[in-house]
Length: 336
Image 1 (cartoon, rainbow, N blue to C red):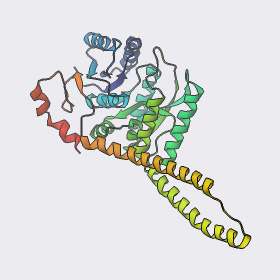
Image 2 (image 1 turned 30 degrees about the vertical axis):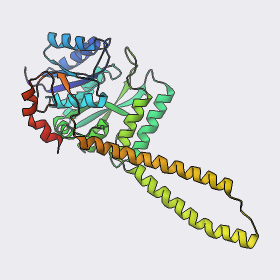
Image 3 (image 1 turned 45 degrees about the vertical axis):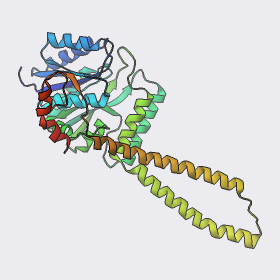
C-alpha cells in the first residue's frame, strides 16, 4: 500500500448503524483529493457488532485499518491510539457518529495546504443538542480559556487536522488523563479555525453522558492549570486577613459600644463552612495526586487485541509473547 498523505482517525464505541455511512462519506470526500489516504477505525471495546463491520470494511478496502482494543479505554485514548498508528502527512480526527460532517474535511485540507499546522473545526451551530448541554459547553470553554496558560480555541472539539510534526509531538506525550484539544494547542504550531454546522447524531445515543463530560473537564483543568490549587491559597489568605480585621472590630464593639456576643450558633456555622472548604480543597489536591499516581504506574495507555503492527506499539494480544517484550521503542518513548 502506498504511504498515505492523509490519515482519518475515527474512534468507535457501539456505532454499528453509523459505520457504513461514515466509511462511504469519508471515502467520497478523500477520493476527491486524488491522493493516497487511510482510515483508521479504532474500536474502543464495542459490544454491538461494530467490530465485525470494521473487519468487513477492512477486508473490502485495504485503506481501512482496524485497531481493536482489548476493552474500553475511553474516547481520548482511542484517538491517541489512532495517532500512534497514523502514517499520513496530515492527520484528521473525526467522530464516528457523523455529527462532524466529513464534507468539512476538504476545507481543513485547504487551510493545511496554505501552511497551517493545526486546523480545528469551530462549532458555529449545534443541531440536536439540549440548551443545557450547549450552555454548559460554552461556559466550560470560556472557563478553561480564563484559568489556563494555554489558549485553547473556544467552541471546538476533537474534529481537526494536524500536520505530521504536530502528531509526532503528541505521540511523544504519554500522559494518561488526556485532553487532546488542549494538547494540540499546547504544541504552539500555526493554528487556524474553520467554522461548521455540527449536525445531530445520525443514529444511536450519545457516548458522552454528564459523568464523562465532567471527567473530561477535570482532565482539562488539572492538565493545563494550577488555578484550583492557587484558589485554595488565595481563599485561605483572604479568610486569614478577614479574621485579623475582625478582632479589633469585636473588641471595639464589646468595650466601647457594650455589645455582648453569644456566638455558639455563629461559631457552629463558621466551623461547618470552614470544614467544607477544607474538604473541598483536600479533594482538589487528591485529584492532582491521583493523576501523579496514574503516571507513576507507567502502564500502557491501551492494549490492542487486533491491529496492524507498528514500531510505536503498546502491548499486543495477537502477537507472540516475545514480540511484546522485544518492542522497546514504546517503553523508551513512554518514559520520556
